[in-house]
Length: 163
Length: 163
Image (cartoon, rainbow over all chains, first blue to last red; front, top):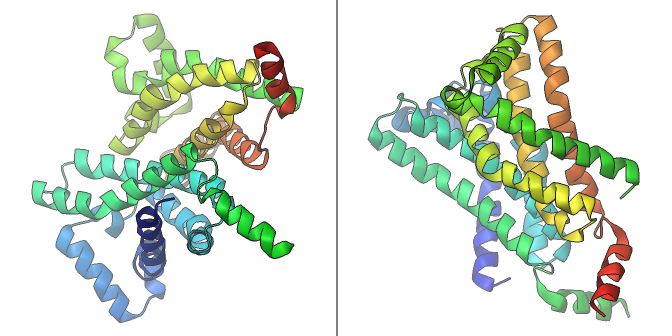
């Protein structure tokens, strides 16, 4: 994997951890959060009118549950695997990428097609959500076509250490 | 892959093709269908009160679009790959399975948690949707843990034919 791409994915996952913990989970567990984080959530929701996030329907909540139970633990594995160039990251990345791209595909359809938001709000929301569609999709595509994503070098390093 | 499992997946994909073409796509393109197929769709929707299917919201429609554009072509590849034991089916199956399990996860949450359906209707709808969650999930899990899903035999057969 090219250094630039690896850093991009690392940035994506490392920034996703605090965003999930501090913001995203408030859609489900907002009442448990301190006032300062509630204010940040309220500011985002009010400013950009992210109504799905403010009043999440059940289908949207099902994605937040998956973010808490499946994605959040994976973020740590992904950071470790990307940092240390672990080829075992390939299959979990494909599963993660397909899953998350699907969730953002549905959220995007709802935001773009419904008449709740103004054009300006739709543009901002698209801007916010796009990385969470593009990165998982790119990760899935990259890992799908590269059987040994970090090259044989990482396997050889492992073998030479064990000898 | 065990013979029984391969037949189960083959059944799943072969039956999915007519279901997608004759029923599922009516949620999006119902006006283009002949009266007899419309009646079948109306009977299902009325009998089991599948309101998401009858009046699909945008997020649900985004899944129907994916069923038409991504899943339907894949069904043919999957039938071919399962029948002829092609190991290249592994990665596309993982992508397909993660994607579809995610869509049915969201649909299930909406049906089970909303108060539109009676308990009896929820049970029937769960019964209908469960195979479309369980099979993709099983396929993803199986293909994730089996690097050569149809064994080396299928590779050797290929090599001996090319020699």
